[in-house]
Image (cartoon, rainbow, N blue to C red; front, side, top):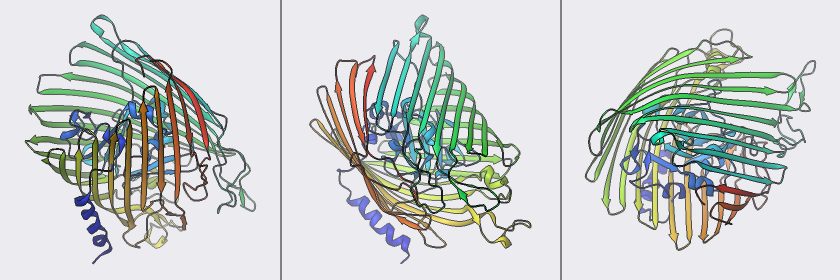
Amino acid sequence: MSHSRRFLRPTWLLLVLCQAQFASLAQAQTDNAETVQVIGTRAPTALGNVVADVVVIDRERIRATSADSIEDLLRRVGGIQLSRNGGPGQSASILMRGSSASNTLVLIDGVRIGSATLGQTDLAAISLAEVERVELMRGPGSSLYGADAIGGVVNIITRRGEGPAYLSGNIATGNYKSGEAYGALSGVGGAESMFDYAVSLSGETSDGVSAVLPDDDFGQFNPDDDGFTRGGLQLAGGLTWQKGQRIGVSYSASRLKSQFDSAQFAPPNFLPDATPDFRSRLTTELATIGYQGVVSPEWTISLRGSTQSDKLQSGADFISVYDTVRQQITGQTTWTPAPQQQLVAAIDLLRESITSSDYVAPDRDNTGLVLGYTGRFDAHKLQADLRWDHNSVYGNQTTGKLGWGMDLAEGWSVRALAGTAFRAPTFNDLYFPNFGIVTLNPERSRSIEAGVNYQSPQTTVGATAYYNKVSDLIGYQSDPSQCPPGFNFGCAGNTSQALLQGITIQAVQRLGDFIFTLALDWLNAKDSDTGQTLPRRAANQQTAAVDWNSGPWQLGATLLNVGSRPDAGVLLPSYALLNLNARYRVSPNWQLEARAQNAADKDYEPVHDYQGIGRQFWIGLRYDGRGL
């Protein structure tokens, strides 16, 4: 019997035997038929009608969490692990269902963001304070969103004005000379509330600690503190001249300035020199204009144009520059021929261009055509997506997804899904000097998954098993004979295959004033050719939390345990982090808050040769004009 079959047998057994005792609080708060999400179908849909594995983290849960960043918030959701080069403010990305950071697509309000040169989004540039809610779809997403959605899709949704003028904000301070502040104003106005608006500002700073540990393998340690400052601005407004007809514009910008440890190799001896002060500045901007209209009770349409830029300047004596510009146009229509029957058709036009201090590359264009169906027939629900992409560099790609679900009994349901996805080669993969190969193929995946859910007023359960085969992985081809002439030290290549399989179990249990939650993950992520575990993937990860809410008091504790994982030829030890938070409502609008990150002051390596931050205390004050 193969290793994969030995792994899958307990996987399916656990699915069958799973009892209603485990889940993610984020999903439990929102996992019901009334919750509306967009990410699983590209159109507003009741979460209970979606077969895909979707989680919604709403503003209430974001505000109540002890997470210090958006990446820390996401890692507490089942099926997601974090890769971060040090503590908060350092370069960070997520690994969803064992896939690489480049295989998770990140959107802001439905618009693709990130670096086209590195092929991933640095989540450290996004302030958690600016986020209204987050929608996650775990599993293949290319059939709806195109390239880079092998592991899943994250849609970060920003605030939109509604109701009377609403002011909110908070200010907090902590050790390591840390501070944060946030302020927002939103609402609607004008005759018959025609105009909606939302404005917010945020800022964070911390001195941090040295990102790299002493005696690291590459001589990059510098004992100075590697701190950061991060600022964010969001502006959004819309005009609704009649019910169901709205034009909206938005602009968001974030800037992250951070210090990090590295080394220069200057002549004549080319030995590592870690003494310079290495800094990076990452600026992300997104401007959008869009129209949403109701043509009839059965038809809606939307049009959107956007420009997104991701500008990175990094180094010490020598500064590297990598700028990405994405221009996107999307047209979409949704037809609802009958209750609980929905058909979505869309066209996505995308142009990507880059400016780099290391090389020059041509622009690339992509056209995507999407057709998606979601339907419910009594106890059964169906979902089918199909997408065709044509790219000016790597040609045509067709991806699809088919899912079925069924309500078995009161509170119980099952689902199954199969899909294909792909990741596009980055500009670095294609054009970087003495490395890039313009004829690279995209990475491709084929996956299946099955899940069982249970929900009652006091208990919510979700369990999913998945199996994903990824081929044509893009990596370093060390054999020059396998490269075109002139590549004497190797090149980029479609070098290997990977097998990603695992189980995610999530649940919540409410008992009086208490809420108990648990998320359990088992992951088997292997290089299919060598049998080796893929770097930075822990075989198991668990999150346990308890929250108590009574009168003006809110108390909470979260324990995150990350198993051992290989990285750079060593096995990093497991670690556990305890986070605590307390809130006291002074009045209906004012609240005192305190939290402790890594309360046990655990020393740990998030990745090889890098260290996380120690115990950090925060105390702050929050105001909410609508009441806390």
